[in-house]
Amino acid sequence: MAIMMRKILQISFIHVAVAMTLVPINSTLNRVMIKELALSAALVSLLASLPYLFAPIQVMIGSYSDRHPILGWRRSPYIALGLLLCVAALGVAPFAVFTMPENPLLGLIFTLLTFTAWGMGYNLAAVSYFSLASELTGERGRSRTVAVMMTLMIIAIIFTAATLSRLLVNYSPEQLQTAFLMVAGAALLLGMIGLAGLEPRHSKPLQSVPDEERTGWTSTLKVVFANPVARRFFFYLILLLAAILGQDVLLEPFAAQAFDLPVAATTRITSIWGTCMLITLASASLLERRMGKRRVAQIGGGVAVAAFLMIALSGLLEISAVFYAGVVLLGLGSGLATVSNLSLMLDMTTERVGLYIGAWGIANALSRLIGTLSSGVLRDLISLLSGSPLAGYVIVFFLFAVSLMVSLWLLRRITVQGFQQYNRPLSFAERAAALND
Image 1 (cartoon, one colour):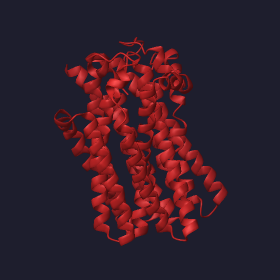
Image 2: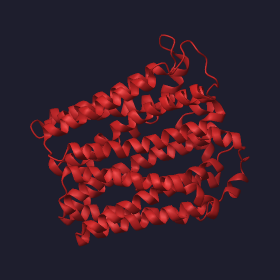
Image 3: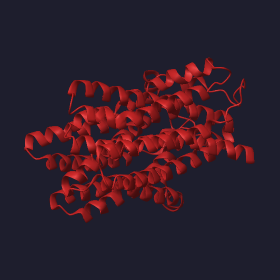
Image 4: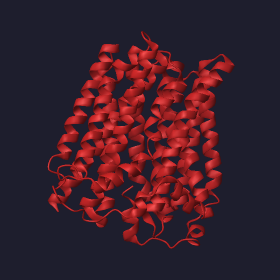
């Protein structure tokens, strides 16, 4: 038991290390590029969406590492390479970005390569350490493993954002570079501790990965779309997650634009949002037992709608207190929606566990891609047409609220019973195994 808990913690450390590199590069740097450097939000959103553009390669990475161990290790070398790419990209990201004002073409190429390296590293590491987690813990231990991984990841995101905020009180390009290098060093150290002695050499996995978990996107969607309820749930997830996750590119630049908040203050927004999300993640299961999963999902979506409306309203009124109230509601709504929709996903996963979980993973990647790209493009387009940068943010947040309202309307037409008319429901053990995603 103690050995297994040590392995779970080590895998969680790797997950945390990769997540730590996400906070500065996908939140703080977004704000600096859009506000301080006055770069196009569409360009920033394109850079931020690269990891999701590369998401389909996870299938190829997983299949390749299944068959091609390196020096006797099947997962560790791929995890290490992915982590090193994430850490290296984080370390050079500020330098690449600050090259653009002086030499636009060279800076753009350098920045594009940096974000590409991070996106490749993220996908390479993620598919490898989730596969290793599945192999080391087995079917019975998956749910506990994922719970520990997700909890520690959110705590690490909160801590990383708070630490960055303190490091950037006296903001300057040099201080930003120093702060990023410190986070990169901490992530590398934590990831190496996680990898040390984790995977036995020349070992066979406790449980092989089913072929259907390596199915490509096209084949997966053809099967899933044959079930009308699954198809409806797929589009529900895209609308919901595109709004909840797509705001990440714009939230900090909006706060800087609307309220003239310094870099340290906007960086702290991530820790506020993460803390509220962690609270609801911890309490959502109790609400599910009292109200039911779909009702909690509806409440979470409704709270997120109110959050986006408040954030948009704060820009019109220029009242920062209304903005922070919206951020708190967004964290609470996101937490409720995350837990309840995960439960619904598991209820609507059949004996073809890998295929359906893969489909929900595709919906997640597409929603992040659509939400991230559309938020930046729409912000630029609306700002150009209206002549007001603030108007672009306000209307995009309002459109996120509309997207959530449409998703809630779709949710009313989705039932687990309707899904199970087409598919056999999962046993308890199968539901725990599905949590590996």
